[in-house]
Length: 337
Image (tube, rainbow, N blue to C red):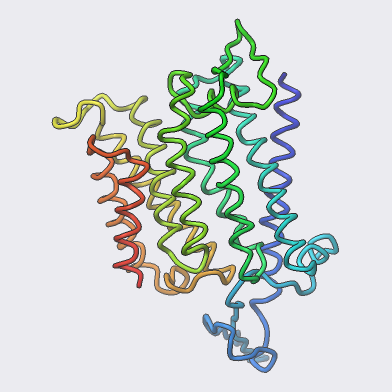
């Protein structure tokens, strides 16, 4: 079992490394190019000057205003980026789906074998699934259909959750292993608190629907979708993880929520939102939030959004998979026009 887990981790690691390396390699090849080699559609980010007693040198930093473009890269990465958009987007979608399956399998296996509690693994899945998905966005092509390929991933998850919630499967246990062949029971174990299949049709389904909307509507060119899903996934997930461990001091108006959990929500959602927006900026996907050259103002705005969303998460009336991303999207739309 340990060897299988190690193999899955290695596959997930190298798959993610390939995708991130493709983006980073392209950045390195596209950033430092002379002015005359660029057209006006590219975005001038800044100028760098190198001077000493022997020479003076100046180049402009450019980044292309869309998906990552191929230049002189390692052969396998270069071949991938030179593929036709439909082929490139299809292959990338397949890679992300495979990574998602491995991601779920790793944590459900750890929970099933009592290596980690299911309450922890469920929230790790909740927190990590969105960043794992979003870091791949720059590798999609600039085709107008690219977002539909990306959206097929949360759509597939919606279909799986619907099938799991309506099936006769239940979460497996070590004493009564599941004979479910379509993976519904394992999915229920990954996303539900109690093992009740009906939970798959509640919070987890809403989570996937919000991710689908964020992918279809703003996609990578806007901060709205990125901030909304990150606040929902990372903030809420870390609030539960930290709150269970260090949440001795509760809010007087919400005895199930803790000060430590709310603090973890703010710090985690703020940091990951900023990192993902920075990643999408340096890869040329979004220009609405300039964290590269003027980070103070956008970071303060992101902090405000995280604080408000942490407060919204305390409200018991509405599912936080709806209230938190709605609040984050509204504030992002106002603060990052």
